[in-house]
Length: 290
Ligand SMILES: [Zn+2]
Image 1 (cartoon, helix red, strand yellow):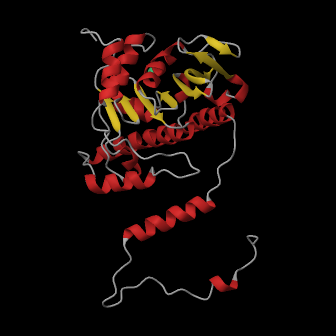
Image 2 (cartoon, rainbow, N blue to C red; image 1 turned 180 degrees about the horizontal axis):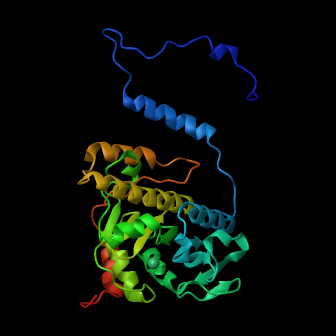
Image 3 (spheres, rainbow, N blue to C red; image 1 turned 135 degrees about the vertical axis):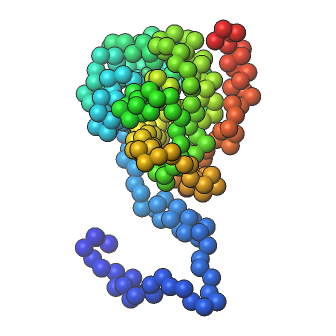
């Protein structure tokens, strides 16, 4: 049926919502299941190559976050295997990105497909990927509101509904380990991230690590917005978090997995680093001085 045609059977008039004596309101689960079914049926996702998706993500972030692309990296696992990744070649603004500007690099940042080099600071992505097999894409930016929040060394406080995707899912690294161009910073950031999907890096910026480019992009845009909300709210006094149970419920709703979509269920043990991740870091590089 086209958008201009009217289905007469659907406009006979359902009763408005009302409270009737003795009649219970339909449970919230009913509406959750109903909206999930309707979204599955009605939301269409475009088919793009990985490079097209990365270019769209880079441009979207550039448009939403002012100068975010001046310092930051976007990457995604290659279909070739776990030790190869695609990233924007160094020297381009994110607003300039086209699918042809993405290069494939190996696990030591050597270019294997395309011309040019990766941003040297992409090295810490390699550590996150190595420690988190569930992560397929990483976005790291120094976006304006996030940069202000971390300059003040403030962790995220989930104090508004749009911030709930980060309930118990945004880590905080309180000490700046320096430019992330060597392996040590990768170890530190990976350990601080744990099993979460995002992290605020004090005196630095943000990182999102997700199951897809789309989810990493969604979280990056949301996290920048969350930082802006928190900073603005703080002008009225101390910021108070919303109820944990309600925030958790909202997070699970907003980030629920779909068959055709991009989100996934939150990590079940997001409070603590998993034993696999801890053992990976211990085995690889964790040294007493780090
Ligand atoms: Zn950075």
